[in-house]
Amino acid sequence: MIRVRFAPSPTGYLHIGNARPALLNALYARRHGGQFLLRLDDTDLARSTEAFAQAAREDLAWLGIEPDLFARQSDRKAEHDAAAERLKAAGRLYACYETPEELDRRRKRQLGRGQPPIYDRAALKLTAEERTAFEAEGRRPHWRFLLDARTVAWDDLVRGPAHIDCASLSDPVLIREDGTYLYTLPSVVDDIDFGITHVIRGEDHVTNTGVQVQIFEALGAPVPVFGHHNLLTTADGEGLSKRLGHLSLRGLREAGYEPGAVRSLAVLTGSAESVRAVEGLDELAEIIDLSEISRAPARFDESDLDGLNARLIHAMPYEQAAERLRALGVADNTAEAFWLAVRANLGKVEDAAEWWRVVEGPVTPQIEDAAFIAAARETLPQAPFDETTWKGWTADVKARTGAKGRALFMPLRLALTGLDHGPDLAGLLPLIGRDRALERLSVG
Ligand SMILES: Nc1ncnc2c1ncn2[C@@H]1O[C@H](COP(=O)(O)OP(=O)(O)OP(=O)(O)O)[C@@H](O)[C@H]1O
Image (cartoon, rainbow, N blue to C red; front, top):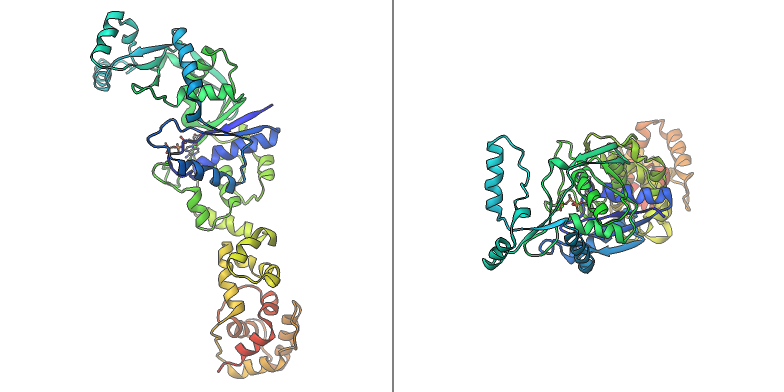
């Protein structure tokens, strides 16, 4: 069984960049009949909050992602501790007592000598007495993973053959002085325990993968398949950060964007596919092939969202908009006809409120040629109005006044709606109805 995971830290609202791995994982699971785990990487207790954890679940649900499984790293400390003990027992996790200042001095010295600033493993050479002396001073150890000095290679789902030369890396710190874990070990332990078969994440994790493959092996677990996709950047090439509150999914939803528009931009930017409005997850799952995702950073243009959104709305079935139309105060019995009449003119669903006001009134009719409008008023058909009324009526007005084209339609629009633009009047007129139309044509 294929099992993927999306593992954000609940340290801020998810942004459109985070939506990319969330969706690529969900689409992969959908395409291959796998399961999706949402795992909150909340080991950074100082920065993680319950509110952000809840928000992450809501924002993913809004994107259409309903996880099959859910976990929090903070619930799994016992498992992380057990794995750490195994690594210690195997000699792969060793105690270090350097202070940040000491490490910094050493790094500078190495750089000064033209050497790479790799941790020199001095702690491995400490005697038992030296360790005891440090402990007596009140120093607490941090713990480093002893890397094998070899190249770790894997066949990346996105990048193809990939490798990291671990000989050029410092032994990574897995446990801080205060006993808390950095991302690296809990992530591996949880991937093992939850049976994650495919780790799909941003390319900011490529180096982690080199290290983590060695940890999987040290823990005697099968190594999952990895895929590292390019990161979304702004049109100016800037990265995104949760902590800095960049372009949050929440903010996009509140601004009235459709999840389909956000999904399309988050997934199709920097893929082999053109950025276009794709409504459903199934359709996206069919067209997205991880192996064809570009390796260059995926620059997205926030303003593309408007066009994508409008396209989705122009084709949106009534049922999908119904609840929001109700919230805007659109009357139930005419809501569907109203939606079909106005959707082609909307950038966002909420813009429908403006056209509902035009239907319901009050509007301020604009009338320049009173005689023309009088002729229009006199030829106004009897109720009830339907979608053929406009055509028949304008034919009559044309016959009476000789006006045609814009000269025929614009004065009628200005009188009926008070505006010089808007939805096709064939659809709007039956909603305005005879009484209101007559009233608007009688002004002045
Ligand atoms: N700009 C981006 N484009 C695509 N994927 C991203 C981007 N930023 C983060 N990710 C991915 O989102 C997932 C969750 O990562 P994480 O929670 O560390 O988010 P973050 O936004 O980088 O965090 P923070 O700003 O809190 O450091 C990871 O798979 C990471 O690769």
